[in-house]
Amino acid sequence: MNKKITLITTGGTIASKEINKGLLDSGAISGMELASLCDLPEGYELKIVDIMQLPSMHIDYDAMNVIRKAIENELKDETVDGIVVTHGTDSLEETAYFLDITINDYRPIVVTGSQRSPAEVGTDVFSNLKNSIYAASSELLHNVGVVVVFNERIYSAKYVKKVHASNLQGFESYGYGYLGIIDNDVVSIYQKPIRKEHYKLVKDIPRVDIVKCHTGSDGVFINASIAAGAKGIVLEGVGRGQVTPMMLDAIQYALDQNVVLVMTTSAEEGKVYPSYGYKGSAHDLKMRGVILGEDYDSKKARIRLSVLLAAKDEVVPEDFSY
Image 1 (spheres, rainbow, N blue to C red):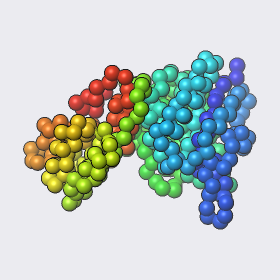
Image 2: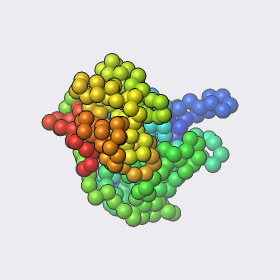
Image 3: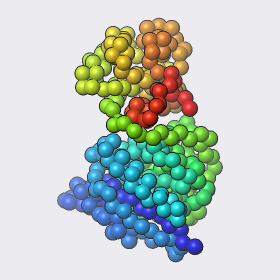
Image 4: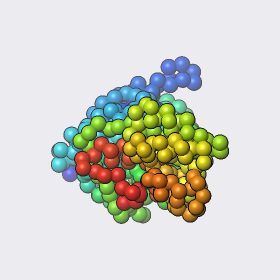
């Protein structure tokens, strides 16, 4: 029996054409044209759904919801084995994680893209697309949630991030590694997430901003975020979750305005933890009402907080563990 896979295209470098030397038109290639260039073996039935043709930094929550609804519509067909979404790489990790916590289905959902355009020498378009289709059809990825396939590796949406601006090995999961590989068209899985979370969106997704901490940081960006109507702010602190003392007045003001604050760390590995007792430490912030963001990076914490604030009857937890 043929494997039925739906390919949902959204644009990005993987679907780009050169408009003049050195410049690309992102999303210029249709899904049908893209798929026709991918040499799949017999036994696959591929349905193409073109929903947008955008550079990934043009994708916002409205666009993510369009992608989510398109996936859910395809999954209504119980004969569909899996979904592949092509996407630009710059915000791929954010869309993948959004889909991971807003879609509840056992079948594989794979997000992929490319670092080089289809016409470039050494392009990764066709290997990434073909490997994604193999992954989406694999029962080994049942109940894993959304994954990212890139350069033959399979990553969990929660921890994957873009780590190189242009190299073909553009994505990694620091501290956790990849879930498995696709080698010579064979999917192998070595580890799986042990828990899965899912939230149903019933309200508009509110504004949630990220404020990065550095030496000499003050509260100007926190105050600007509040003035812009943010319902949540993710603080990207340092180390175990520290900020400067000059930020504390603005942090307290945000809390007094019922803005939800989550503390993350700029470190690539490890989690925030109340290890110190001084002003601006994770302990001090937690005592004030700031949520400790565990090992989430700031982008993933922003996605999760936004979804929690838009989900039915959800109360944002005192910490970000699950």
